[in-house]
Amino acid sequence: MKTTLDEMQALAAVVDTGALSRAADQLGMTVSAVSRTLARLEHKLGTTLMRRTTRRLELTEEGAAFLARARAILASVDAAEEDMAARRERPGRLRVDAASPFMLHVVVPLVAGYRARYPEVTLELHSHDGLIDLLEHRVDVAIRIGRLRDSTLHARPLGSSALRLLASPAYLAAAGTPRRVADLARHALLGFTPPSSLNEWPVADAEGQPLHVAPALAASSGETLRQLALEGAGIACLADFLTARDIAEGRLVPVLPRLTRDVRQAVQAVYYRNTPLTARIASFIDHLAGHWPGANPGTGGSSK
Image 1 (tube, rainbow, N blue to C red):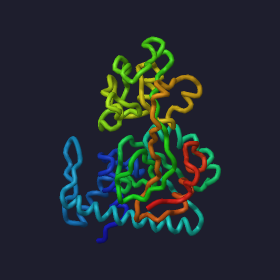
Image 2 (image 1 turned 135 degrees about the vertical axis):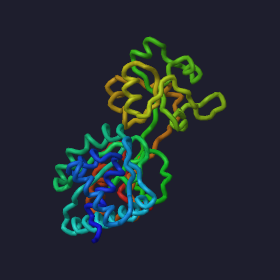
Image 3 (image 1 turned 180 degrees about the vertical axis):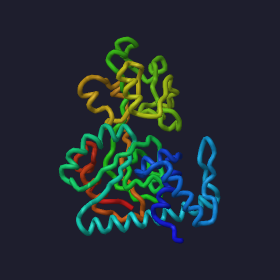
Image 4 (image 1 turned 90 degrees about the vertical axis):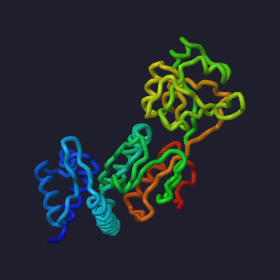
């Protein structure tokens, strides 16, 4: 008997979600139906694809080899369907991924305008604060901030966002306002969990190099650091896309503005090189580039 796409999708969903119950929710099936589908697939292939324990599911070597081929097949089917949708000028489903701060402060405010212009697009918004494999998570386009290291991706620059040292008026009233970079050593500094490169601030240390800080309080998300700064927990270094409104409305105040260097984080839309630039991907990138205030003029082209 031939393996079906439903069986491949079931296997991929179980691996991606890590549990039969979560895979069932994702696929709109019952847990027992997912289990039967996997059993039927293993019977067809005559091998064990997953080892089931009380705590987790683990791919066998044969399962990993089969899943790699299955993902390629599923991606090809998706691409074929998307091509047909583009030919009918119906953009179809669009899966977008971005770090939660960028999703909340940039993408979400632009969604209503995008949906009004492209009502036939079915949007799925996903947030991961770390880098993800677009193919594994079946993401069509992701927004990446900072240097792009993955050479398998197309990248279209969208703009950049300046970094600033910020604190709440209440914190500065209680702890004092730093006048020199050296004064920061006497303050509560809010920073990121590793990698340490995220804690390089745009002010010069005693040697004239970018200041590396050892945060007194660290978090993995810029949104968490923003909330901590708003609550008066200390001084944070955050991007404009996250804090522009807070600064404009006086909830956060720039610290050492005259000593702050013009350091900007690049913002790029990325998708896999082997994925055609379908109407749905192009429509979203164009809308983001055209309406985000941080977008650079002339971001209408793509870079490879």
